[in-house]
Length: 119
Figure 1 (tube, helix red, strand yellow):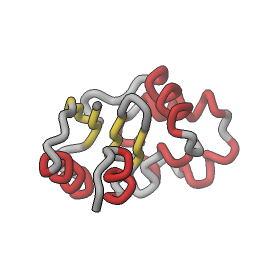
Figure 2: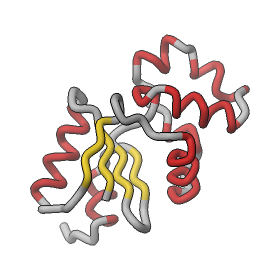
Figure 3: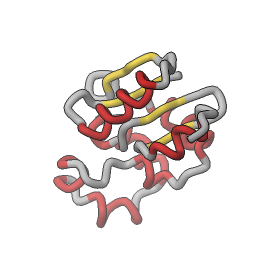
Figure 4: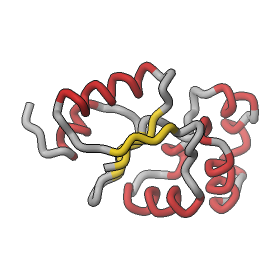
């Protein structure tokens, strides 16, 4: 699995602690220094079945500074993918990418289900 996070993000820290507690094998990638490419984002978006807006970090400083709440509805999908790929801090985190799932944000019950854990 690929785990994309930002080391200063408290939610990412919780997600990583959860993965470690489960002894889950994953490759760690910092979303700020190793931001996702447009091709990766397109693949993950298609695999996730989620609306593209869910991939945006709507509480982030960049999102607010760029006034994306107003601009996104008018942007073409191609423009949105290019924007996400331009700055990892615009991407919702953490992301957990498995062979048959893409998880955006940390919701423990959702992650447990994807990893086949019982609680």
